[in-house]
Image (cartoon, rainbow, N blue to C red; front, side, top):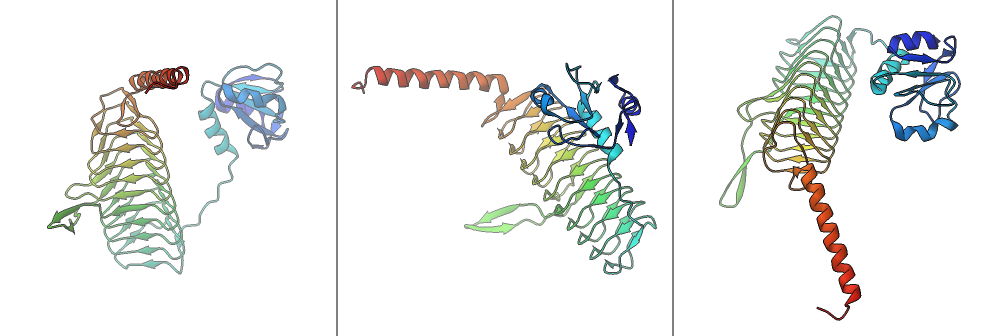
Length: 332
């Protein structure tokens, strides 16, 4: 149990209400009980407040008729810290499961955990306190740093370099051969990919995401980048620091994302450079270079405000044309 006073101190928030109220957990605003804390992350959630049974709400501004609340500058940061506070952490005991298949040349730190049916091939190095979950395959020459979590049924292919505190979720494939072909007389021939993948510190790779190895230079994911589930990162792609790649994004081979780029879900990047601090809206198709500090949308992608204007113009043209046909049905 945590008192409201201690929770407010942890979150560096402003307390309104009874500081001695005790909280035992965290839940959604719809499902929270009087012993739980919930969140009003933004204005659209305020309509749920009146019906909520939560013992305390954490919010971005003071709300009327809420007896216990903590006002914070960043509700999402507070959400992460609160979940971490109440989340039950299951410490994995270090060691290697009997069913794991470990090559004798592999080097595994004594504090690492290797679960059942993991396959670790020759010359692999696994760092301190790293967890490899059941069924994963780590191929020859792979180096994995410390405090990493490799989910179940992950495949990391030869010579990939994985930094510290990296999370790779279940089913991801790191370092598979890229899709490179040449065509001669109508016949497609595979081009072997000789390089690897580099994933720097504090990167997260979502479930069932694929990151292809490079042809002659490594595919690289820089420090702090977060990649959602079901993304496709092609060969030779270079992703900068602290980027956000949302689900089902496709980066064609040799695409480049500079630092702090955000790519919305189901967007496609076609071997171009996306400038620093830029945003690619969901479902966009980017076929030309995007300058720094730019928001683009649509297909082909263009500056977002321009696309909105063109949509509005097209909508008016269609409306006017429809009205004209209705008024003059016999005109061609």
